[in-house]
Image 1: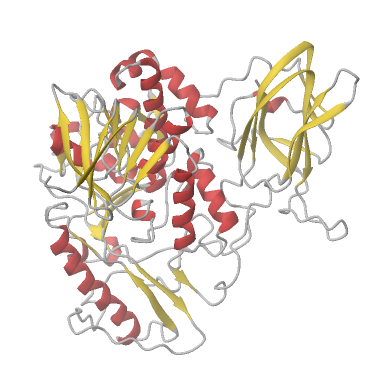
Image 2: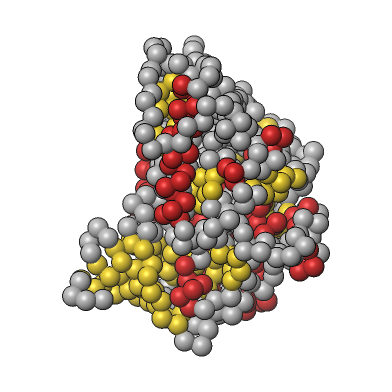
Length: 606
């Protein structure tokens, strides 16, 4: 390593890779008490969702109603809706950055590429990365390592089992398996961002860009992005027939020539209604879909995802369609989507913990586009919101591993229920499971000044499968827990409706379910995309004093989150929550989100 500066640190958990999976893994582990280093080789967090690549976040909720991912994923999306109404990528970057920096248990190493690892007898001792901005070798010793690098960098460094490519039909009996396996993958893409102006904008393509005079020259790829702003130029894609890691630089060069040629086609080759459109961004860092996939104790298959299978060790879920980009990418005809292999799913499928830890390295877990799945199953689990919930699952698991001194396999065999319970407490949805209710909260202790609030105790915290599962409460009408004797209250937990399907949110309906936008039309260029009208904006928590009066111990007037959980330290015979404002009133001068009632999924105390 020469004479460059060297630094060493010792922590509980080392997360390699700062996409959504790695970012959420680090946050989850830190919030549950583990000391964490997050090593990211880029200057920003978010991976394919960052300003460097600019792909919006998709997941199960983008395809199947009522399946929007919650937990840290919804926390971040709501913060973005609240703070970033025009969906600017730089603001989005800052939100991910501040979420990590706000955790005192996380040390963030940006611009630090993992280069070496030391392992012995199937156990990782440390990893070393080179931080380009400080010219420093950063060595991290840890008990648990989580690889969220996408490319599974630790697989090669520690000899963890992994696979690359597409399986033969006989391997897992999958309908879409090949007659003979190969090493081909889905390709990588470059994104384009543009906006509409009120005047004509010229574009002169670089001489080295490809020229596509006709749609046929461009392989008949769909390019109505300026009208259909919920799509993009995902098909500027190559690399599936190359080595999707080692050939990335050469593939990137070809993609740049294609991307500038495509924009030239939109602007100058035929009438695409683009005269007033101006180019803002063409990526120079390809967004990668697939490379190495780890082998865990279980390999998720096409049959699992199509059947909506649930697992006893389920810790995350997916629901995005099987969306298999064929290796030819841009070279293939886009007519009738001939470059894609798709199958829509109608139910969520579980992701087992056994698919998130290594088969042969005893302290290695992973999350994101590198989990233990077949190529076909991978075609649905790879999207970023699904990667995010997997990241939260392994981060929470990592903290438990530190607590109990276990390996991931031991945790799976002996403590999986505790992991599932923690995830549901943190507002993660696990299909087929219900969250356990606090012993202090039951039908005998619960009462409401208006309506029946018993649904708050059913352990389901979203509209799902035809059931609302929520209590519709009137403002200024309390929900109360009353006890026969004085109880010590250490925490309250509240889950309110954040409009997971974005049904009651103002803005262009085509983009309400995405975190950021690539194409900005004049009709919404300077307007807000709105915020969920049903969100509870103002409420307070009160306890009953010995003199019979109620005392406010917590109040918030500008809530913009779905889950509000705060520590308390109080002894009382009764505690209540009073929703105050959810609606807009010019007469009262109340600035609120729009709904006339508070829709609440859970209110509990511990």
